[in-house]
Length: 348
Image 1 (cartoon, helix red, strand yellow):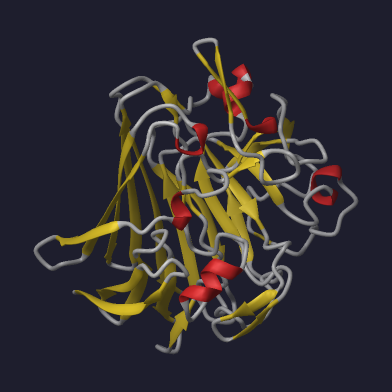
Image 2 (cartoon, one colour; image 1 turned 120 degrees about the vertical axis):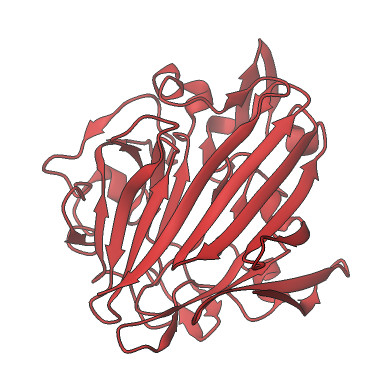
């Protein structure tokens, strides 16, 4: 079951609606502003609903605070070094909005758009969002049509991404939900157990840009191949922790691009909620909310009050052949971009 309710107006006077997907007792609320997951309520081990994503209670919260809380990210998620995109010998200078680099679509990415929406499915359990990006928007080549579908069934929130451009271009979409399986606003996530099926990460420079190298996780703070608390080694003296003030790094998944499967799992002892992550993307960014410092839905969000698992192509892969070979974000004219990520919740 889905229903829509008025959520507020943007500073430009555009209407924002909260669109609810029900899955038994569980409930997801998506905004047509930025495709934002505004809340995601999951029944815990005691049957009580726990909102496991960080967010705000009004439109102003999303407009006035950084961090991309819960938002759909595009045209290109994560970072491109110095905003330099080269396609067929032509250089496109993208807007640099993070440490001298292009991040999450630039000045006005997909997270700022008002998306069109329709309800689909015999039970109305799929929300289909659509939008367009003009040729030259954020200086990317190609007019692009985009569709993102949210489906919430049997404890699984599935996100299907699809896009097509009328020119060769770069596409790398993701979702920027911050999770706290203890409940948003309840404290930090450092006791959460995390598993990531990845033998390698892509080390970065001090501006969080990787340059084509890989690092084996063995013996490092990035070895999550067996369950370990997020906070166990977050304060280690490691360059890739120091640069980001915690975890903000890309993991290269132990499966090929285009193969759908489970890539991560997180578990809260307090709530008993377990979140499994599935995708057919080749990589995932772990971000531990190192920059959080703002008022949220149920109190103040401090550093490490949420964690993100952003499925993606490898950051800066458009400038690194070694990364591009594991999954390319460059799409030909009229080539269909289509990937799926799912967050499945169970209770122990």
